[in-house]
Image 1 (tube, one colour):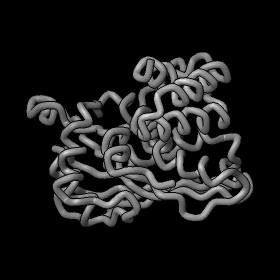
Image 2 (spheres, helix red, strand yellow):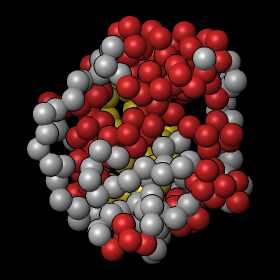
Image 3 (cartoon, one colour):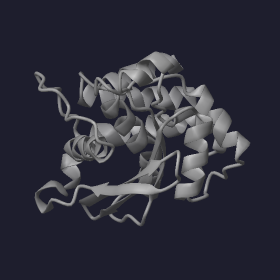
Length: 229
């Protein structure tokens, strides 16, 4: 089962500068591209394929909570991907990521991979300067205490904080915190994204509902359910 190019374009998270005025205020634009399964074991392969959509979507959601980053429409990124004829199974290298990000109006691109080895989970994110095409930094959940698959929500949060630091933005402001989403709910949500990308709206709704049942405060799953109903 392959993710279609339309699915990758439609469900990828896009973070970009919204206007020149915002750019002058120090807002940074990000295009969060595909994360590939770098070789995972211990779960159904369809779940790992679904996480190729779910991880960048949730990483983009987390990045958007930073006051100096703004989420904009997904259309420009999808258009940029089509313009570069990006194949669904094609690895996104730094040069391609740079061109796509620039085409979408973003200052930076984020892409990478993940691996789940029977519960030991690792995300590697490459932060690419869209102007130069250079990889600014590769960030990961390299702390041995933060590599359990059950900590997937915290892993995504940690990686997002390192991405923010890599481009010179200040840390996330202190806040009241947000609910941790269980790893199983993230998998259900990711399956919903995959099914939605295949236009299987009824089964996508079932997965989004399962994710919401497991984690009632999971806003992304609620939004997904609203899209497919």
